[in-house]
Amino acid sequence: MQTVKAALVAAIAVVALVVSLLPGLAEESGNLALIVSIDGAIGPASASYVKDALAKAGERRADIVILRLNTPGGLNTSMREIIADVLASPVPVVGYVAPSGAHAASAGTYILYAAHIAVMAPGTNIGAATPVQIGGPIPGLPSGTPDKEGKDKKDGERQPEPKDTMTAKATNDAVAFIRSLAELRSRNADWAEKAVREAATLSASGALQANVIDLIARDPAELLRQVDGRVVEVAGGKTQRLATRGAVIEAIDPGWISRFLAVITDPNVAFILLMVGIYGLIFEFMSPGAIAPGVVGTICLLLGLYALNLLPINFAGLALMLVGIALLAVEAFNPTVVIGLGGVVAFVLGAVMLFRIEEPGYRLSWLVIAMVAATFIGFVLVVLDSLRRARSGPVRVGAQAMRGLSAEVLDWSENEGHVFAHGERWQARGAETFKPGEVVEIANIVDLTLVVRRALAPTSEGGTS
Image (tube, rainbow, N blue to C red; front, side, top):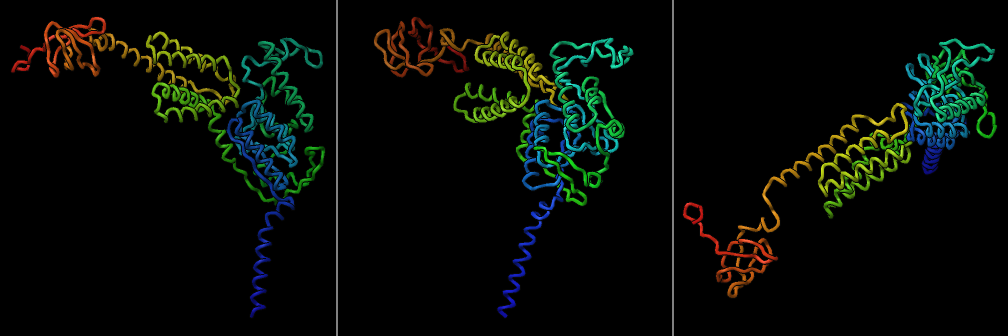
């Protein structure tokens, strides 16, 4: 009996050990495919997500990473970070524009060119890779420049002249970058340049014919079947033969850090965090000891500044915003209206200039600017109304405000003594003699001395006698 029990325990232990080793055995056998999805604008959150996913793929010894793209573009800095991670990845990366109806525009085109294998689903498109954040017309060759055969181009094919030197430099840099990626992956470098200079686009079938992509696949399973057996060169010049047929497909979701970055690096969220932070601190300084505005304001301000550090901003715009906020703070302590309106104007101009990009998903909403500006204008109007009521209302301080108030006699000798009035002890004098505890009326103030007289007794009808 004891032998049977021991055998049963040993069998259970062996089964548990085998089950625990199954994931590791699957990863070591090279039949794991990880999917990383980029939907929407490419920014710091996307770069962090891809970096973490590629690191996880290396740790798990995945056979392949499918980088699924559906993006209108994004930040140049984030795009270059993703490309650097793809080029340095020891795990082959397949760029996959999917599902049908998706596109890889602008920054997405560069990333697809950087992938070890480029694949598109039917009904997708790529291209329009001009660096639009620099603004201005599409730069290129001067009008009338001859083509490679020495003939002038037709009018419809001529390129508009560059708007300025910086525009031309940025475009030429983008062209050199995408051509280098095309040469690295043996893809069509001429069309890549055309995508940058002329914002050219291609459908999936057109991209396959033009040697821009390697394959067309309807879904990840078909993609894995088609790339099985292909030889790719990964980081360090090592070649690797893909064994992906029947591989287990697993999606990698972005971690909490990437989700957090996706929220705060939205220009509108960063803008609002900055406003809440600054005004939280202003309210704390106006009402020391409130604590809550100071704590919330400090946290929001730090988050807003961190987000601005990750985004390309115009420091002149930020300076104008801070000047506007400073003027509004001065308006709160010293109402003049003019300073407040100047602060609103400076703030709105700075907000318009704040971000140096025009990529989809990274534009500051005019609605957000209008709402914040309306709040500031409302603040100025409230200050203006308070100033008007203060000037038109009764006087509440000074000698004029003290006349007619009641005072209690504290002590009196001949024609002078002390009275308690307005919550304070005052020196007083009068033409009459009063007793301590008697209520008198303040007639005037002369050199911080109250001139008092006997208070008139009220009549039975509530008036004065």
